[in-house]
Image (cartoon, rainbow, N blue to C red; front, side):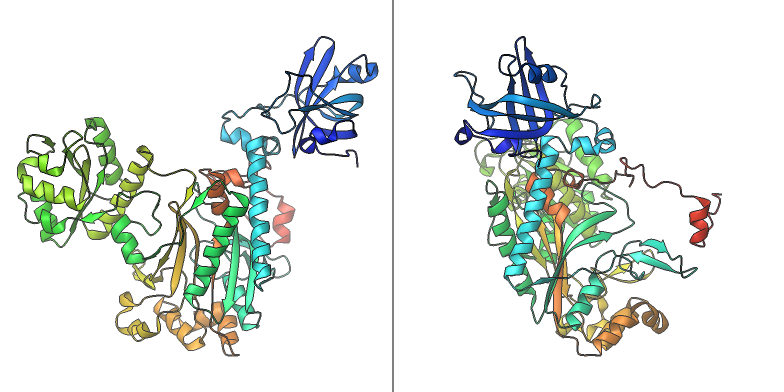
Length: 598
């Protein structure tokens, strides 16, 4: 080894020891006679002192060192002179008196500062990602990711799970997103697909009798990127035989609680994890992945609104719609431009707009409100009693702002859900070091896809319906409940799974309901249906988004900050400049020809 110790491990116990260190020049300070180098490696920083009276040739080598040069140093660990200690560094009480040094490699001036935590334009960081990872923030995020994944593997191994790798080149089957296709050189005109998830493979492993399987799996989906989505991502994939929903949810609750204690002990977890039905989550929060770090719950005001003289409310209620709202604390003084921003937000979500009612100045109780202290374009159509009723139901107080949306039930709930999230961000209601996990259960099995005019799976077509709802598959599909569940945290879905269908005839029935012909079923899923006829056990599982979980553990706002080499929002790898053209020879070998754009 070129080094005997890492920079970050040296302390007062090493004083007097001969050490060899290697790393990158973080900072160089020339004090005339003495030169000081802050030497950085993965574990930390150590100060190296180059004294010409101790080693003249070594000092001469140091005079040629610059930022990000790779160097190796030999010397003796000593206490820093009194008054020069740096208590911000773990190694701040010692320094290494250099006796020999060599420059292993020079460096051009980096396109951004490595040793300063400053904002750098993201495309530049991704173009030079290998430099970006040298910076403390990215390095610490990747180490945190390693610790979280290692903890997960150890946790599951201790509970009898075995890790099994499954193929990356598989068959293209419809699973919700577009596949990435890989043309076959040996079989002209045929394609592999990169797996959107190992869903069918892990079910086959249950048929194979493994009972407890997991995998840290790479997955691929050709869909638009966003802050919490990449075209390739990593998930913890898990499947168990002979289980119920609660067995899987309890296992993951234990995993998350212990993981946070181990890798981010400064963060707090709400426990036990609440269980919310899908209907309850939509009713109270307007989304099936609510941020539970703050309140601002949605309340139904339809019965009160229907009795007012406000024509908008009465019209919506008369058409079978809903009037719902939330109360924004301390926002009664919002300006016209601030209110218009909220209007623009909800209109972009399909709602007609938001009706605002400002409840005067803070202080006192609702009993102290007068019609003169209420500000709203709707105030002249509402009685003071009706306003107080709405405010009371929304848990509001004087000084608060009521935000009310009237419209079709789902549109009103969804728009209020986004409005709730926006007000939570504006008012900084969410405790940053809190992880508010919850389990969402009792999803509908299916939903009607208006665009194509057929039923579609709420999660995926392998989810089993509740036993008592199976007869409804043919008579009332919209009433069928699935045995699937999501795990959410701080406004993100970080995991989802279900108990699976394990009888071939029931699986065929669901496929037919989704619009597949018997021929298509055999072609696309024949391998699974055949397996089910050889003694498939009851089984279920879940897939956890490792990127999203680590993003939350790291306190980041995008998964790109916890992935070593991510793609941009346009799905471009800036480090390798991919995707990129290939040669005509490569295309010919794959039996492909590019079609000219029209």
